[in-house]
Image (cartoon, rainbow, N blue to C red; front, side, top):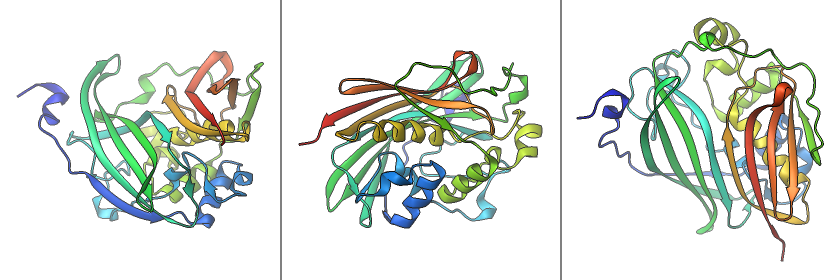
Amino acid sequence: MGSGLGQYVEGWRPDPTTVTDVLDADRAGWLGDILDAGDLLLGAELPPTWQWGFFTEWPPSASLNADGHPAEGSFQPPVPERQRMWAGGSLVVERPLRLGAEVERRGRLLNAEPKSGRSGEMILVAVEYQYLQGGELCYREVQNHVYRSGVTKAAARPWPARPTTPVASDAAWRHEIVTDPIRLFRLSALTGNSHRIHYDRPYATEVEGYPDLVVHGPLLAQHLATLARRHEPVLQLVGFDYRVQQPVFVGDAVTALGRPDGEYAQLEVRSEGDRVHVSATARYRRAR
């Protein structure tokens, strides 16, 4: 048997999952409100990455850990005192998801790889999801999560000064992202994300040592995908790759930026001091 965190995922092969949900237009509208992007719901299609607002899981309160995360989950590795962070992923759009229709999501573990870095040991878990409507494949997605063991005291990190002014940039596309406690709470409620760093400030600062509430990484990525969709209306967004690099805290002045280049666009969530919080690449196809 191996040593370190790797020993906990040797032979770990969770069963694939299949769940269904209905892409309710009202629920999509709630997410659009959080993203300041309700105008993208004028048609019959769900914008890419907005599927994260569905398939909400609600485990019993008694089954939650002290940090608010579920003690067990389909693709959560059996690591003691487990902590999770959404690290990035990729999305391929084969055809749009239709609002108002049922969608089936099939999930399977791709790999669970032990890593070691400046912050210590971790397990990088990659999970693939396929989204189908009417038996046809619509989306193929990979989600990457980092898992650590034990509470990582974030206060030990040398956090830079909090950004207070929108970043200067010559990027063709920009959107000033609004982060406030109400939006974070509403997104946590909408997605069933009970991790306390997003809504419980005393826990976030005193237990995990962050300077303030932490903005959801997926929310920042959704702002970039929304920016990419809004500014190329004559093209179809068919690919989106993203990586979460640095946290954003509630109230920070952060900006979504995009630089189009033909059938691609490079996107970032950026703040003062040239800090990149999330980076992404969008890929397009001209509509037939």
